[in-house]
Amino acid sequence: MKKMPNKVDVPSVKSVISKHEGKAGSLLSILEELQENDVHKHLSEEILMQVAQKAGIPLSQVYSVATFYSFFNLKPQGKHTIVVCRGTACHTRGSRALLLESAAQLGFTDFVEEDESALTTPDRKFTLRTVACFGQCALAPVVAVDGTIHSHVTPGKLLKLIQKIQKEESR
Ligand code: FES
Image (cartoon, rainbow, N blue to C red):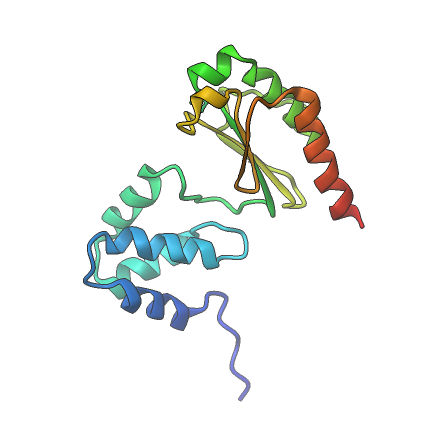
């Protein structure tokens, strides 16, 4: 009989756990690696349950770590990520306009900053999120595009960056 493929790669969860088990901060490292391995860069409920079960850690503890650190995503992420800093230094140098400009360019027409900390386009090409501070306040306003920090960003500069990726994606 043909074996049904598993939706989640169980052996890889097991191997990630055994790679980090027993080391300081092992749960963080396990979750970090599993998120990195995930095609949509997130930790699904199923993965969190597997980690708890296979590592023998209470599910509540796994959840509290996954929800405490902002770099863990519990929802599927877009292929490209735009992170706009909304800390004080960046805010005073115009980061709200950057956020609104990005939201409009990505088609989040009814975007309300206070309601969402991250939004992903329906085609999962882009995720737009905010961060409290990158620790690069002298370079404000700061935006990270696919992990690359851009300093002294203007709405025009950010628009060009997004449009460039959109053009590449539409090819
Ligand atoms: S406030 Fe934006 S980098 Fe610190």
